[in-house]
Length: 104
Ligand SMILES: [Zn+2]
Image 1: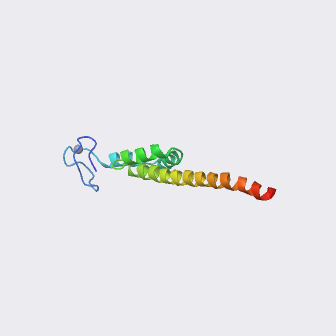
Image 2 (image 1 turned 90 degrees about the vertical axis):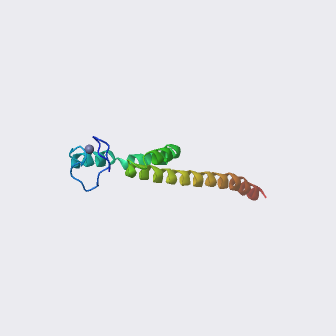
Image 3 (image 1 turned 60 degrees about the vertical axis):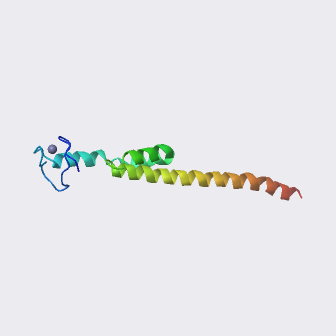
């Protein structure tokens, strides 16, 4: 991780920053808190797949939980809409055929 005060790279297990001496445990807590609302972004990705993909790429490094959720939501959303479109096509083609057979 990186120290939020001076920006220097520090060990993930470090308690204080070796460069500026600031406490890192509180910084780490704040970071995990800001990454906790992943589910909401998964839902966003599902309904707006493009936004999910963009956010997933943007947050890939600093907010991995949200990025993952947004990307998974986007993939599920895309798959669901493709299935829906195929289903509509199948119905649109099969219903007129059904009526044609009934009239014969
Ligand atoms: Zn520092």
